[in-house]
Amino acid sequence: MESLLRFDNRFVAELPADPESGPRVRQVHGALYSHVLPTPVAAPRLLAYSAEVAAELGLDEATIASPLFAQVFAGNALLPGMDPWAANYGGHQFGSWAGQLGDGRAISLGEAITPGGERRELQLKGAGPTPYSRHADGRAVLRSSIREFLCSEAMHHLGVPTTRALCLVATGEGVVRDMFYDGHPREEPGAIVCRVAPSFIRFGSFELPASRSDHALLARLVDFTIARDFPQLTGSPGQRRAAWFTEVGERTARLVAEWMRVGFVHGVMNTDNLSILGLTIDYGPYGWIDAFDPDWTPNTTDAASGRYRFGHQPQVARWNLLRLAGALLPLFGDGEALRDGLRRHDEAAHAAARHTVAAKLGLAECRDGDPELMADLCALLHAAELDMTLFFRALADIDPVSPRWAAFDAACYDGGKRDAAAGALAAWFRRYAARLAGDPLPVAERRARMRRANPLYVLRNYLAQQAIERAEQGDDCGIHELLELLHRPYEEQPGRERFARRRPDWARERPGCSQLSCSS
Ligand code: AMP
Ligand code: MG
Image 1 (cartoon, rainbow, N blue to C red):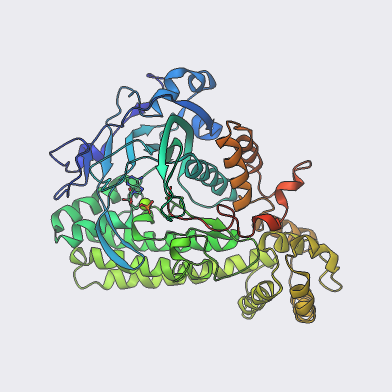
Image 2 (cartoon, rainbow, N blue to C red):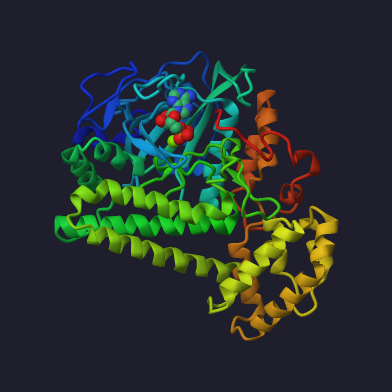
């Protein structure tokens, strides 16, 4: 393995470091990271890995099976060229400025250069205390690590931009968590995920130096980010900064449109959890829409305000982008380039939402009136309590002129509500049939388009929870089954129909299956 991974750690080579290393908790000024080593764990055991991420990194099966692999990705050993650090950043949490946050339990090992010449930062989540751990332990529990490992891989195969995961390692150590925040902490098994992305720089990475009026540090980070992560941008330094902000805004808009397409609710869209690359990052109390509900959030911490509810995600992304613009303003003169970037974000969000409408409904293009057709359908799905994933999947097979209602039985959570909405649904199908009659796509192409936009298998909250409960009993097979299933989310997989079923009644209010706390 030593010879297989090559590192080129530009973040630490080119940006200012905290002069103190080690995990003593502190405020770190004038620096973008601190050197800190992972804290070794008792008994590393590899639970799962992503074969594609391993292959991309040039790691073969023998390497992965070697004891050294589990040691390295548990934080017990370093490979030559690794130079661990924790990044320093701030963020707005639930609408308020939270000051310095930083990697409290993530430790980056290095920037690997793949055999294909791509840069991939390898980051352990749950590797022990850092200067940014505040009062917490720097560790992660098995349940949240399984959720991050599986969901980031699932998102990739859904075609949604995301950080990825190389592997999931059990630490052999207990971690104490008060899962319900009700004064009953218990010990749970600990684990570490190795996350992989070209960059883990966040909106909050720029907000922290800006909040301290450290404009020199802010400028260094901006220009570093552009040079390392956006090398395709050209022009004068000012032009590059302007084009960069626009690109961040456009990527963020497209990212959130993809979440809306597949029914993903991030759950904690704080500015420290928004990637500068427009990737889904920091999988915590996320969830998947079962019965369609724009007001649903999986995050119990956010249940009252619903700030990060499903239907609100595009607005939150824009709010976060405004915070980023505010942080960057000292570098942007009169700010006109930032205003222009925000306009371009809005256009990209609008275009992406229209694209989603056309793809999900199987239209050649989105015409005037189509967004309204979709909005009316969504209101009906909500009123009738129909499963988002199963409804859109069934829609591809339906004859819109005389829909067979039984096709939607699998999507139905409440027969009474469905029956109450039946007349309105029939009226909607008449509009849809008329719209399709005027659409140039041949039926087979329409159906194919819809099956590419409407997944059959998503990481339903209860499915993840079942795999977690098995793993907590020592049986990792549930993790492997889901990992394999979610490779091909748009394809019917004979024998795996049970993974496509709607949320069972027992899972409706069960912790982990519908509601999650931030405790992880
Ligand atoms: P999150 O909501 O997961 O994005 O975390 C917000 C902040 O809390 C980040 O600075 C994290 O690094 C930090 N944090 C969360 N959990 C822990 C933990 N167990 N130990 C140390 N820091 C943590
Ligand atoms: Mg975070």
